[in-house]
Image 1 (cartoon, rainbow, N blue to C red):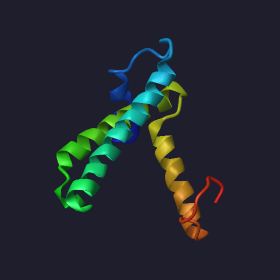
Image 2: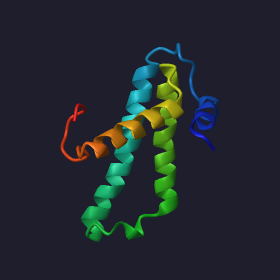
Image 3: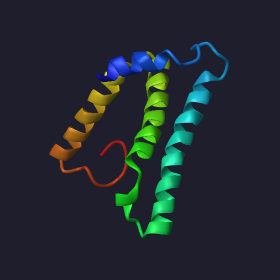
Image 4: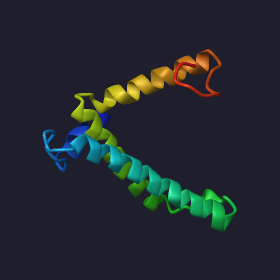
Length: 109
């Protein structure tokens, strides 16, 4: 499935754009879902000496999917095709790699 097809499919289960506080809801959902992933990772660090080989792939895929849903719907809220988000990110990373600036911090590197 390509990114824009996924985004269109995700929108079938999204609230209307004009729903009050919808952007806030989407932002909190995105943070919440990524937080769930981080929480599960924390428990692997705490309980399994950072051995991520035991992480249930299906469980991780479901959590990543929930994160992707919020990202796709949030992007659509601002009329940004998900494929554009992906393409822009890859271009940004390729530029940083070419300049030897993958490490470090800050958006302007």
